[in-house]
Length: 290
Image (cartoon, rainbow, N blue to C red; front, side):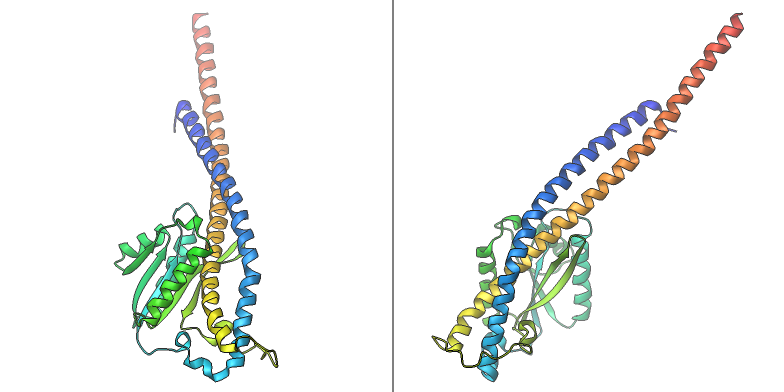
């Protein structure tokens, strides 16, 4: 049984940890609100540009299969863009992404897979397991990414695909669904599939006049569509990270509160026992004298 002094020190230590976790929870809440607003604002644009590309694809028809970014390949070289976090203390966020990665790898064991990574945690995970990381995207830091960063990344992936270095490119990121739900999600980035555009549901544009022609507009729009997908994946992953960190820090704060209650109970009992023992000693001494 710890002494009164040890219990007092433990209560103080738990209180200090509680202050830290509460501060981290407040910081995560503030950043979560910022990134959630950005994610919410980007969704209408993402949906609109996807629908526009789908409608143009419907106008072009079967000729779309001749576009290099739409042509499926028979090879087995795959590039995965993995989006994780730079820091820990965010609950099961990174472990869920890693679990989804391992499941996907088991299902595609016949493929030669290389990785491009956002986030120090993901890079560390891949490096420790001997997976081949061809690029670690650390500049700018993950929290500072913007549309320009997404454009640079998308262009690099497209160039590698068109050069024949890879036969397909996949994204693994955490899709933000709610404050308590963020799901690791696989998306086939290249070659572009009609299903990812919702082309089956896209209605033709009818007699709409396009200047220049539909194919030219389509070819100009597809790179913007790919950049938007990267940007949306980055923003949703950041939002998911801070939602997970906020939840983890709240749980840590609540656990510290509960631990303080238990330790205070032990401290009060131990202190009462000590006082009672001292009183008994005094009474026993007084009776011995008398």
